[in-house]
Length: 476
Image (tube, rainbow, N blue to C red; front, side, top):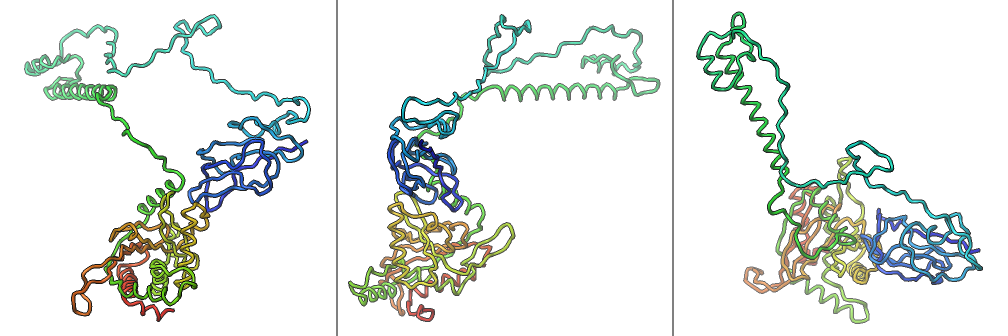
């Protein structure tokens, strides 16, 4: 007898709670080996293949391609042991026991016959609400009154029925002044309903005027209430409609990026400073380095690798920017190592792979790691660990042909250096106008971790290294 085991979506780490099924790698009835990849899923961090810890025959799959599953939800069931492959359809609803019979009270799959089926699941039926008839009868012979839809129209304002007639008191009214009587007649006031404040209950003019104000106030309140009810009940002549067009769900990588950028704007009081730098000497130094290495020395050193090495040297001088803010304890945490993130645009969106321990690497080592991570990002093979844990980010938006930008800090980091395109521009060099290779550098920083003096010092040091690469020799 085969044992049917349920394989659930595992915890993929880094606080991920859900994943989207991109592609199934097995079909129902296929034989799988232990640790064989069975499904390709996309998380908010990366696209990964999930291996199955069981070996046997796939008896059911849960979730179609494109569906999102939470961590811990069933992915598939595997019959472990001697059993004929199951070639019926894919399970789409219910737990694994409903598809295979292993979790119910039946015998499950058998070699001969049909086996004993599991008892049918009992479902609660929700009865539609009924409106009792006018006679109040609720027996089986009585028919419920039909439910009439409520029309969205102006409600009819029904006046409060007048109380039962009461014989008005007779006799003289305690009024002396004819002006008081005239004022009461003009406002349809019954003097017998007014309590006088004069001597022996005499009704004065002030008593009538007070009664007039009370009546006017009551009428205004009633009119205001009726007006509010009418406005609320009358539908708009042109109801506001949702905008039409293509709708793209904010989920997966795009959803994670959107949430992170929005959180950065909400929580981080950022500021930006920038400077133009003459990168002619940096480009010449790069060309000399690549020429001296020769073709057998490996890949060429990229400009991004040189800028990354400059950033690690600058962070050693200004450690305030290699930090994060603990909002709960209201503390600035300066981090001991530099894990340098760099922005990489891929078909799946913007990603920020992280070069671990960049402060211990030279330009060549950083360049090789950047190339490896970039290729993994383009092929969707980055792991969540390779996309998290950065302490500082380098953003080379010059590849898009733009000069400057004000980048959004990669939360929870404290700063990001942006690099524009390097292009020939007129520049004053050694007192004369010349054509030089100029680049714009911009630094966006968390104003909680440092002031403008520190940020300006960091950016000026980076610019000095770009203009005179020999400055780096002091830190190498």
